[in-house]
Length: 139
Image (spheres, one colour):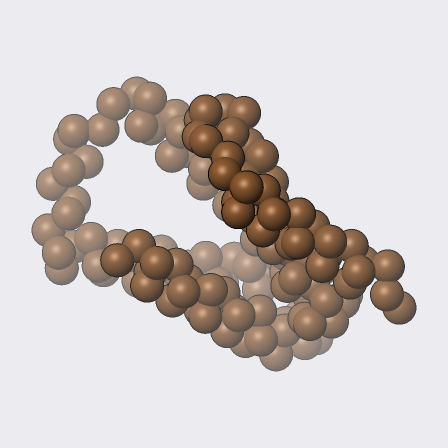
């Protein structure tokens, strides 16, 4: 089931790049990110409220809070840089380079989370890096 969610994530990430590029014309990229963040906030809290998942907030530990806050900070910084890159560059070049995050995730999951690395994961990560380098070196 996780594979379906991952594919849907990729589809919506692609739409994010296209819609964002169209939406940031003539405005500050930080303002665009703030507006986008408000929309995300409303949608996610709406889902939490409707599903009743909010009751789980009492079960969060200090470790949960720490890493969720760090993840939120990293996400916010990622979005700010992403929108700035989209404002200055072409979406067809920015989005694939942004996907270097996959290769970084593979490496960090091995180092920090001690997840195993199979040859397919290593090969896929290398192909992503290679593709990003081709895009980076192009005009």
